[in-house]
Picture 1 (cartoon, rainbow, N blue to C red):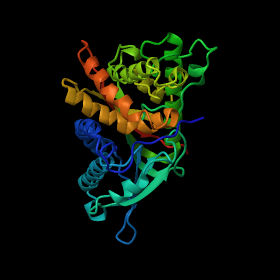
Picture 2 (cartoon, helix red, strand yellow):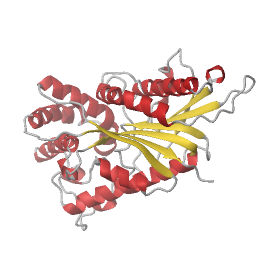
Picture 3 (tube, rainbow, N blue to C red):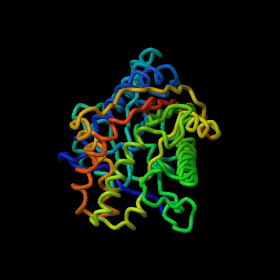
Picture 4 (cartoon, rainbow, N blue to C red):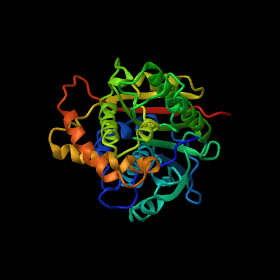
Length: 358
């Protein structure tokens, strides 16, 4: 069964709206790559006229509630407009239709209330998992996804099976786990990515573009060496601590696993290269500092993680532990920041072109 949850909605102190500045920094780092690659690789097929302008369809997959999705859409539209202008088609620019996609539980009300008033595009919401089909065949010109593809559609069943060698007792990630656990996580990620990219080959027009920004670990490192996952694992330490104190059921902790996998560039490239009709046009690894030094840094990082994971934790553990678990997590995260690390995770920018299925 697929995991379906969403980032914290609204605009309160624990909302994703107020706690997505780290993702914004990543988007800002990749902005030039996104803009330049669109201008370099987009093929203009001008069917516009003054009476009937071309409709250029864009989708942001895993949009959440803003504001980052709006900034990315603006970057895309500016790049497409410039491409049309340099192509000599300035007088017949297309009309833009933007589709914002996320899980059905996403707070689309907050998303639509936050839409920029001066936007130069029509907007629509499309609920559902992006690991399946969302749009009609050959209907999308450009699709984009940022900081969403590290989420798995589900936890591999063997992780919670006591009879399985991949039973992940006492842990909520694959950090420090057996090879069987790591292999189960890796296999689920690869299946999800294959489904994601295969769906896009049907939805994109011929020569349509897909731009991806995904968390990644350095090349040559093991999955368990991901610094992001090691940070998330400290949340598991907080759960275990509360279980030992009798504040949580140990069985509940044993049956909880985060549906997250951080790949390296080679793993992503291998999946894309295996999908017929797709070609990699640009692949760039971007590393930017997200170091936690002070207790305040740990608090801010904890708020970002809470905005993303609170709904998932509530589903499994209920409401009562939320404040306490994240209070402890701040301390665990600050402790983790003091451990020496030679390599740091970053983000991977990937531009893919689709030779659409006839």
